[in-house]
Image (cartoon, rainbow, N blue to C red; front, side, top):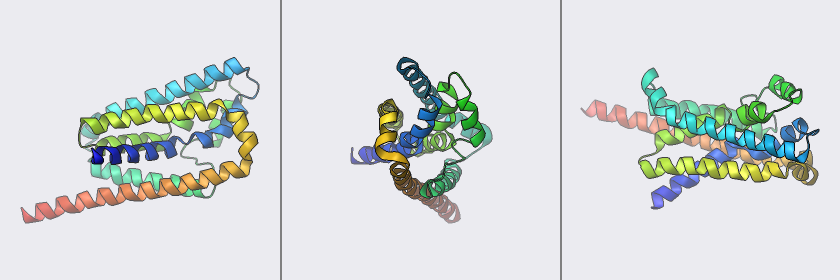
Length: 216
């Protein structure tokens, strides 16, 4: 039970900082500034549903992708860790991570009547970093309970995102640009640490496998 709790806590912290609803606040507010409250709420629901489908879909397909391309879980852990480290480095400098969303996608979103699916759902909430994190966590899961924990965490994180983005205008007024940047830097540091841990875990498993092969 202790191991399950520790894994669930790792999954929660990892997915939360990658979905990062606070970082999505300015773009969400800018893209929905002219919307009525009802329209804005509908857009938010579509964004969260899109993110849920994408994250759970890639999670379910992760094993199949590994088999088709002959990818080992260790290779994905190391690669995922490197990607997360890069995203965290950009966040630490309070720069908008272009791994999450590009300038062109943000500008295109401002001209759309409905931005719930793109760019809010994809790639802002369910971007490459979040997808990589989910697949990596499921690759690390040792049993069914841990895999269920990952999917449960996805739901919890998206509910938190709903709460944060639901009061987005208030968040912008209260925190301002400086406050949001401070939170972004803190989360960036956490993302970098998680990325390093993924790399360490991947390398450790590779070393163990090489040692066992050498003894055999």
